[in-house]
Length: 121
Ligand code: DGP
Image 1 (cartoon, protein in one colour):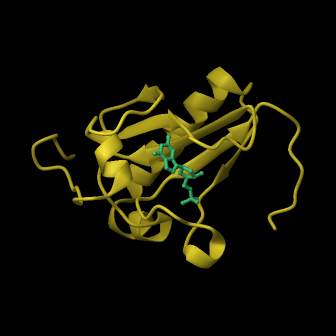
Image 2 (cartoon, helix red, strand yellow; image 1 turned 90 degrees about the horizontal axis):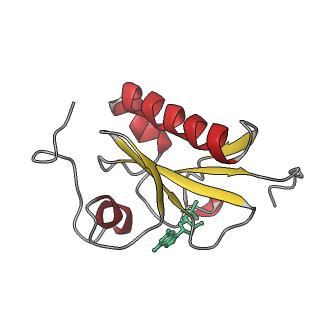
């Protein structure tokens, strides 16, 4: 387990800066290892990003390096969804620019709060 002193952090990473409190965000939940905050450009009534405090570029790297931390991220996503979306939600990890990933600090999109369609265009 990493403490704040030896956390994996990358200079100029937007989500590392949000985790560090250097960039403001609407934080809805947090644990020792993960933080959940509202997406700046919500696509649904509930649209929250869940990130590990440690920097990993994407979900495949996180799963390979620290699978327990990925489980922590999923657990926090579920906690957010239970509280804000009746426990029914989509959890999306865009992986790679072609798939729509624009911030290369792994984040799960917790999307819910309405009936969701299925058109990942
Ligand atoms: P993705 O495209 O999957 O990498 O998702 C990145 C998301 O991050 C996107 O939905 C918009 C969101 N985002 C970008 N900049 C900020 C920011 O400064 N604050 C917050 N809260 N969200 C941001």
